[in-house]
Length: 190
Image (tube, rainbow, N blue to C red; front, side):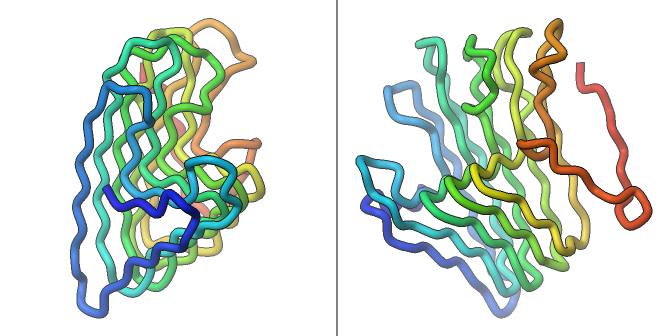
């Protein structure tokens, strides 16, 4: 993984399609995270920027059995920005999670904002989020999510099997997209 625990910024860029692949599996007390800024302690800074023509693939799994395991493809204490022609492919899994709230298995997790403005591809899969009473979100900003443009985007998430109050979603906080400008296909991933 790439980490800046103390809160510094991380920028990943490439002029000619350079690739970065991160795979992490853990079962300890710490979350499984591919790229991380400022998770530890009381640090208040840390942005993650992926830009240019970078191609980033992240596959993280937390196999622990302590009820609320955490897995984030990218965690930023501040903002996550994907721009230019950058592409991101994230798979997160918390197969043994039994916590229903859905804030523990996220592809992009920002304590402030997530901004996507790229001609590249975004793919996020957070369907393996635990037992039937859990939910997950592909993109989870505490602030706002801004999708200006994307070449192609696919987000798969898990919804609670029986409680409609926990629907999970592509983006946390009920962000909606204009069906006139975005092709939207909702599929139940049971």
